[in-house]
Length: 597
Image 1 (cartoon, rainbow, N blue to C red):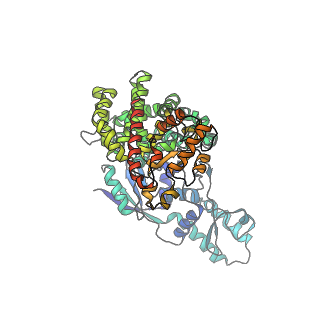
Image 2: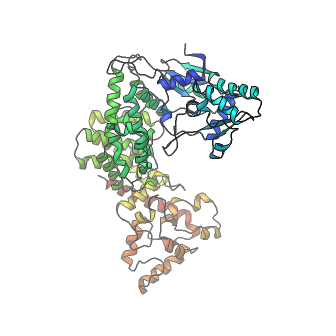
Image 3: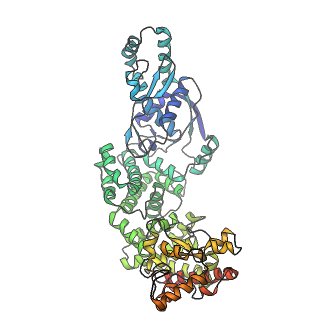
């Protein structure tokens, strides 16, 4: 049987959570419901409305290193927000908000009006309100709180009021349906069941299953899950470190927190991995697996050959996960990897348009570090691999299978030999002379081919179009999407009858240009503004930009992959110009790639 369906009281479900029999990792992660949704849930239970099924997934009967079983025997797959809402509203436990601050969502009840509301200070002096329904839920509370309430509200219908308070207390006895999935089911089946039952049609990701599986592995699993979650949060918000320490002092004293504490003073946002990215890299480094479902199976103790639980495999798998997370979180390696990306010209997060390519590059970096290759060799391989992946789309589509094939070949012949083979087959002359110009036929500034062109300019310190000193890197800024303007101004093209936006905004019509230069160009045709640029070379008086010599101008055109014949092209030859510029840009990227060795 794939599942069982049972009914349990709210009180029973909350006791499971408090006793750790059901793992809900999201209790320690940001709670996304607002107080209004929490209030509405309690109101629905009060009125006897259905609140939907919960879905749990049994864990395999594996043993921890000390011989004990993991405390959590079930993982809550669907209903995490509802159960978390119940723990804060009925039990009084704090939740973690989007800023990782712990706070209560306190729900008040007015028996006279049978109305629930989020508690506000205004209610403090209003005797009609029971200020916190969680206080009323303790076994002995009604003995004192009900008489106090009646005394504070003389003249009310006492029998009716007591009946309504009794109805409130019955909330914890309301029955909720629980669908319990068998431990033998694989991730894909569990996810499909979830989608069919869940009315929102949301899909659980393998990373969600991994986080739940990790959290279910006793105290060690809980700490590793927090390391993953807190790393991703601190990477984006370093200032939250003090808050996390004060909210979770026990974890703050753990070795897992010490691994990530350095993030409190790290201000770079070049690579801010989400928890999914951390798991991706850990899966590659620790298990040589690209499919997260395979990692989850290993953490569950399932032997990939027999599909059965093998004694000791879960412990071994958690040791490997622990080692991979330690490597991922190493301050020196993480920062040095970012330097490798920056040395390839990818200096801002906006240029990193494929997170998967970054993740595999970091995994490759850590694997080569573990294999003790020389630093210069590692840098060369990782730089080339990352840019190759961006240009070939190697980390898109069925990338998980591709990743595993790549790791297998790297194990067999070495990373450099495998990369050389990929370059010969996928980055041949035909790629650079035919495929690359075709790939440049796009209007997306986030195209990996255009961002590679920008990275090429950043790497060799190119100045912007018609600039003598202002670099492309400085103009693109932190976003990587800064001062990008048109060689053929849009107004000029539209006045000449070219109105197709996909042509107007081709990346082959883009250059990184200082805003003052762009303003001076205005709506002028290339021949008109280049006439003024050439004139300033003779007078040495800046007009459009600050270039003062023909040598400077030619160098600037080459740095920006602008054909030297730009002034000869008008709107009637615009398509011809785009074709020529694409080839010029492709040549520029080819030279850039070859310089990465």
